Structure formats: structure tokens, C-alpha cells
Length: 139
Ligand SMILES: *[C@@H]1O[C@H](CO)[C@@H](O)[C@H](O)[C@H]1NC(C)=O
Image 1 (spheres, protein in one colour):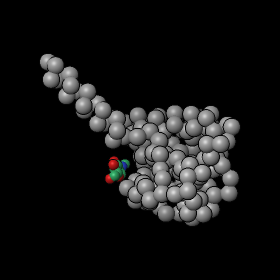
Image 2 (cartoon, rainbow, N blue to C red):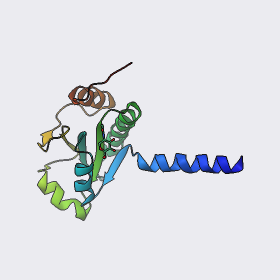
Image 3 (cartoon, helix red, strand yellow):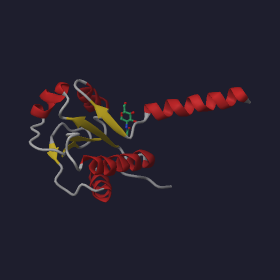
């Protein structure tokens, strides 16, 4: 019994580590994220932790990521701290001018799209659910 409980906890911990709500990306892990989830819609939020409103922004963003994960919506959300020196070249590569800034790529596409809609939980759910080409089949 004790063994099963421990095993259960291990499995739980493992699946928790495996599936992330918001991917904390840095340097080359940004490219890995892009490659690994090219089959899904990828959303990248560039933020600066110095920004006063950042906490609220990140709360909405990660709540949306949690919902996508629970619903198995093929949308992956990542965040990138622009003050981290290893992200400097990515700020340039993706032409980020201000923070927080959100860009996204639709599934199987490398075309950079700039997210211009609202930055609340409801906006993210509405916009990205409608953009995903994934057809949900409810039996
Ligand atoms: C996309 O690919 C990743 C990595 O191989 C996989 O974990 C994920 O389940 C795939 N998503 C879909 C919707 O098939």
C-alpha cells in the first residue's frame, strides 16, 4: 500500500514536470520549443520583470495556459524575460519593440504573427481557441 502511494506520487510528479502550463524559455530553449511544438500553435510572451504591471499580466497568461492544457487545446504558451542577456538575440530576431509583447505562430507555420488583442484571460481563450485549426470532436 505504502509502495503504491509512493509510486502514485512519483507518477503525479513526473506528469506535472512533463506538462508545463507556461514554458519558461531562455536562449536556445526557444528554438527547441519552436521545433518541438511546431505541430501546435505557439505563443511567445516577451516581458520585463521590472514592469510594474507584469504580475497581473503573467497571472492572466498562465491561467489561460492552464486552461489550454486541461482542455488539451493544441496551443503552447511560453514566456521570455527580455532582461536576461541570453535572450537578447531573440528579442532582435523576433523584432520585439516593447513589453509585454506577444507573438504567435499557427500550427505547422513559421510565419510570425503579432498578437494585438486584449491581454486578459478571456481574450487569450477566445482568440487562440478560434485561431487553432484543430477540430475538436466531442463524442
Ligand atoms: C505535438 O508534438 C509534441 C511533441 O512531439 C507532442 O507532445 C504533442 O502531443 C503534439 N501535439 C499534437 C496536437 O499532436
